[in-house]
Length: 143
Image 1 (cartoon, one colour):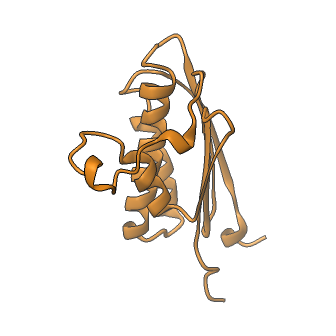
Image 2: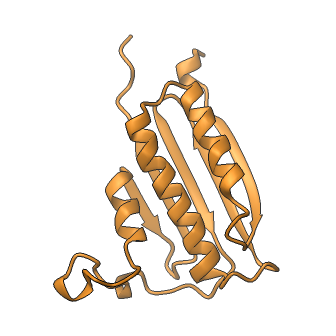
């Protein structure tokens, strides 16, 4: 197995406070830098990971520090994959207003899911919306 084939897995159970996840996100980004991910792509990964975790904390768990956010990340030289689950009741993903519609352009929030979808290759929400799975794929490095 070459270094390009190596996948590292990170599992965390984070308390639902808005300062609980920053070190974890930095750990993931630093590992991806070590794997030679381009900084412009890391910007999108950073934004998507922070948005997904903060949404789970704020909207899913209502910032209840007794509730946890479960995060699993897998990274390799060509793939970032993450699954983020909260303990909230969930929501209907289709009910999230489109932040691009004229009536929502001035709204103070509601852009997180759109940004995640813009930067990731794939994004899936569980049926009740309490789990989000996202993936960013790169082309295989040349030989």
